[in-house]
Structures are given as structure tokens and as C-alpha cells.
Image (cartoon, rainbow, N blue to C red; front, top):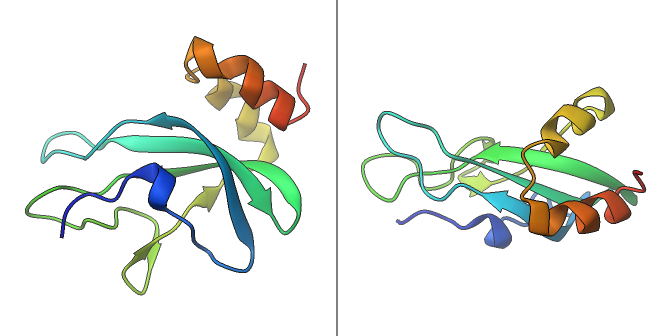
Length: 103
């Protein structure tokens, strides 16, 4: 199984709805973990979420976190949202702030 793109991670179902991927670091390698960041709705509230990406070969394609082999998102605690916004690419920063109602 090959790496699952951040835009294709739709779990946890029922509680989560992906709105926009802000950063996708691509597949992880043996010596470096790649990660992704997005905005979605968690129980109806817009939140920032993150995950460690999976690998193309030799490891877990689902990355971390995952549940029953399906890739999932980790909902970022509100106090970590602002520091993580510093890594959002400039071309997506205005959109990210608007989606999260930040100034």
C-alpha cells in the first residue's frame, strides 16, 4: 500500500469533516517523519488538525494517528493553533485564518 495523501484522510468519520489541507509534507522517509496540517470541522466547530504522514514503502501507509488501519487526524488543542499557523505557507495563510476566525 502506498502513502495516503492528506486530502484523502477523512477520519474520524461522524465527528470530522475535512475543509482544507494547509500543508502536506508528502510521504515519510526512514530518517525523517513528514507531517500534514489542515482545517476541518470537529463536531461542528472549525479546528486545526495534524498528523504524521505514512510511508510509500517499508512502513505504515496510514501514518499516525490511525484507527483500525485507517489514517485519522489529531485535533490540535486551541493553545497550539497559533504557533502552528507559523508553518502554514503564505499562499494559504489568509484562508486558514479566515476559516478559523483568526485575525
